[in-house]
Image (tube, rainbow, N blue to C red; front, side, top):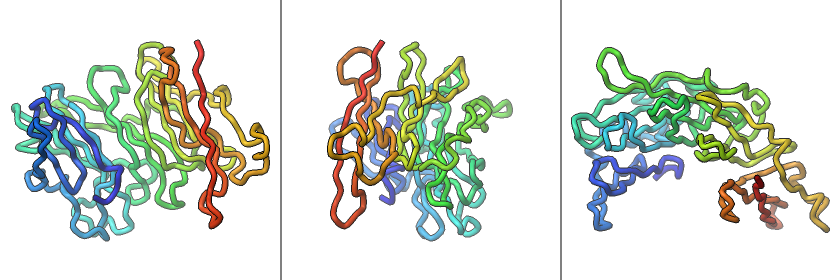
Length: 301
């Protein structure tokens, strides 16, 4: 396995058991906890690229994109300065959607994506979730993206909408970034992170949380609130957080100004609202070691 980003789970053969896709392996579950690697039965576009110099599959997601009860596979190709030498030159990702009741890796409908927020050879498709952005009942693809150069600079999302292909009747994906808010405030933020789909504001509609490391004066946590099928950014200045100045004896720590870094959603008090655990770090990467303080943020009605 090349990266933890590309591991995803779901029922790709429709038998009710959870299977595992990891770019270099497709583990099919027999229902008794036994797994068989069927990577060679996958379409070639979803198998590992043999020469890593030419790139690799970076992230993936498994979800039922055509609502037939069988989960499908989407995988993104990594950014690479050697795109012209890649076997999938010109594409940023590939999807394999089940057809006629078959598993999504056998006689499936294959399609490709070519859009990239920062350019095809400079966009890292870092983390992927399946999420119905426009509330039409079909799961879309939402990707956390950042730049390859400058390295991991820029924090944003990219949307691919799940629509019907009028020529075939099958599903396909089209760019949907027009449903995103203005993300320019995060253009210099640290971009490595993960996405969660949850109801941030408890209105019964799922939203997106983007959690990452942070830099000086940056918020590592971002909320994309779904407003009737389009997304808006929550003003994180209204969200509670702790800084080292509030901790006796830690006022002069390094990494000053890292706000809500690596914040993770968790329901700590069973109140029905999403709470968070974040960290304040010192000496990260220093030879003298590092120190970390965890703290919680409890949501209130």
